[in-house]
Image 1 (cartoon, rainbow, N blue to C red):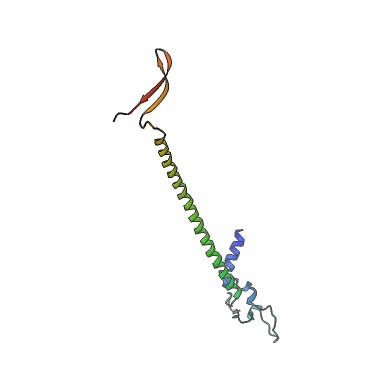
Image 2: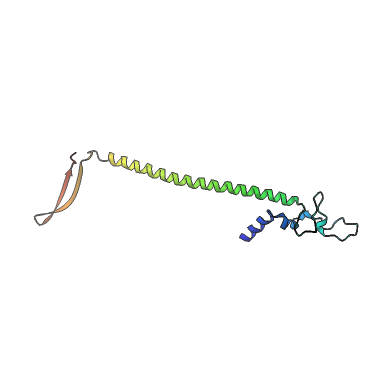
Length: 145
């Protein structure tokens, strides 16, 4: 759904707002033996910079965020490639249809010329009124140039 897509888009773009939610940004309070009262974000996972609790934005680090951000970028690149491929396929289909139409038209013209061995000589059959009655007529015509 759009809400899910928006959620995953935002957590992969805005670490200042959503950095608190990444699992590796804090250590869940494990290892605090000095008895001081601290929030979980004051003690990040091993090797990461902590968040400064004096501001409202997250300014710590999350390796999972960076891994996810890279995965999203790769997914977006693949989506762009797929869109370009679909556009190329669509253009190819349109060009193929036009090409086929022109080939068939040319082939039909060629057949029409070959099927008349008399050249411009044409036969026409119809019924005409002659002396008050309908009479069948066969007309042979040849254009004069």
